[in-house]
Amino acid sequence: METGKANNIKTSNFNIDLVEQYHLSVQIGIKHFSYCIINTKTRTVEYFNNYVIDNDITTIINTDDIIKTNFSSSSIAFVNFPSTLVPASIYTEDSAKEILELNTETSDIVKADSINKIDAHIIYTLPTNINDIVNTYFPKAKQKAQQSILLEQFSKLDNSNKSAYLFINDNIVNITVFNNGELIFNNAFDFVTKEDLLYFTLFAFEQLKIDTESVEVKVYGS
Image (cartoon, rainbow, N blue to C red; front, side, top):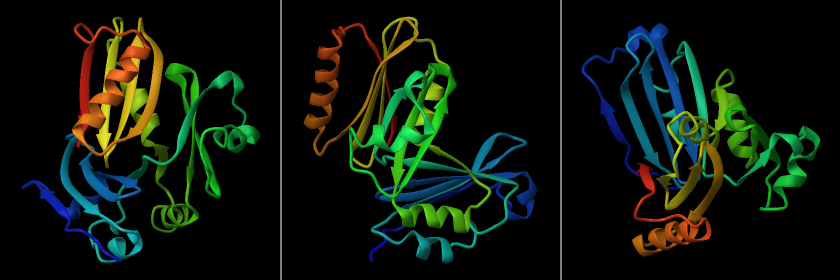
């Protein structure tokens, strides 16, 4: 087991004794584990910690005194786990795993998030050990796929013209495109080099007949 160095940022205002006004926001990815602490009164991030991991999140949690604090509220975002987006009209809880298996191999745990703004569901799968860690250490946390959070936020922006959003994390790029306020494309691609990243982006735009000179592209993530 190997864990990389933590990337820790703490503001001068951070005070762990103010736990009753802090929200804990956790991201769990295939290659990283990170969290930030948000002051709910000032709506500011006052603490951030990021770990590059191999396979042992439990050791990180057990040796991190901050994250084990009993915060007033908490949330979990699952990052870059296999997922698929389906219209709400064809989604049922009983068919979720079968639908996801059309696109990817599934683990034992299959979850789904409703995205009301675009009338769709994200179906995604988690390894059992990740699900067990969340239930053990963060039993009261609200859980969502990162894709759900991104789509919810992107859909609130002005997408009256063609708009593209690139979210980059752990050598995976999520490309999301809207046109006339409608979601027309959402997919994730593994990449290694900057040329790979450029290829997947331009190929998606070509298939969607998007003019690269005029489309507004916003880039987020690492």
